[in-house]
Each structure stands twice: as structure tokens, then as C-alpha cells.
Image (cartoon, rainbow, N blue to C red; front, side):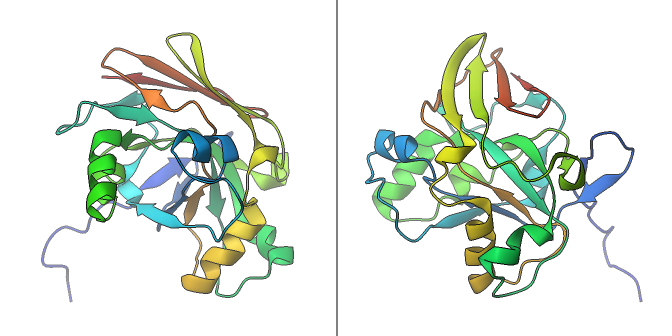
Length: 227
């Protein structure tokens, strides 16, 4: 038995300090997980059940370049901590959720904001705004065995040397163990899943030629040029 077409390449991410790769199965993203960002997007920041959307595994992009996408004139940066899972399951307790984490990385959730606004107004899904090619620039994964599980630390993003976003991991409304547990109630999580944990306030547009620098305390800088 053989495939009738060539099998698609497995998306994979670099791991710091090794030539090994992390194969990606699914990408989950949480919305409005910092209070200040919820406010700037016109929503109540009071804690309520989280909501998630998905990007495609091959949207993850470790090239250091972000090609400006078609069909938009308003693409926004969103700096986020990414969580890479080494195992999964269903109905995972919060207390043991971190046992499923392989490591963490600095990432961006690039968003065609004009298309997202149109989708929201029409009550339609967000994929056209979120799950386009190269829409999730990401750095190397740092294994949790080396760095532990970061619960606090500065989260910033600058564009052309001007700081735009500023927050701290301790400001996450839903913490990493809670996100893993909640997702596992609705999906069967598995090794290779990646979770983007939300962005602090200060999101805004980029243009071709801009250089974005994302920083989360304890990680190398993520430098991405808009091309």
C-alpha cells in the first residue's frame, strides 16, 4: 500500500542546543489571556471560561522572516509564550498538567486584523485572519528539563527598536496548567501539540521592511523581519 500523492512534510521546530527537531501535530491558541489586551480589544477582562482557536502546524515559521500576506492592509504583531507538549490525553488534572510539557519558546501570533474584524462582525470563524501561511514566527524550543516552567518574566516586543508590547507571564489570566487541563476536556491532546498562551497589550500593525524583536525573560531574542 502506498500514498497516492507524496506525503506532506512533517512541520518541525528547532530545539536549543541540539540538532534534534520537535514534530508539530496541532497548534492551539488562546484568545484575550491578558487583561490589558482584552480591554484594548474592547472586552471585559474578568475571568471567564477561556476560548481557543487553531493555527495550522505548517503556519509555524522559524525562518526569521515574515512574508507580508495577501488580501490585507492591517497585519498586527502579538508576542506570546509557546508551550510544546511531549505527551497528552484527556481530562488532565491541573496539578499534573506540566508533566506533559517538553519545553517553551518565544512566538508571534500574526493576525490579519482587518479580516478578523470583518469575521467578528459577520459572526464567522477567524481562520482567514489567523491561520495563513507563515503566521506564527517562532524561536527555538528550550526544554523544560533545562529551564523549568516559567510562571513569571517580562514579555516585550519592539518594532524597529521602539517598544510596542510590555507585559509579564505572571499576568496570564489562564495559567499554562489551566490551559492544558481545559483543552484536554474538549480535545485529546498528544505529543507534538503546541499551545500559544496569549499576548499582552500593545498589539499593532507592521509593514514590509519592519524588524520585530520579541523577548521573554530567560529566552534568546526572537528577531523577525517583515518581507
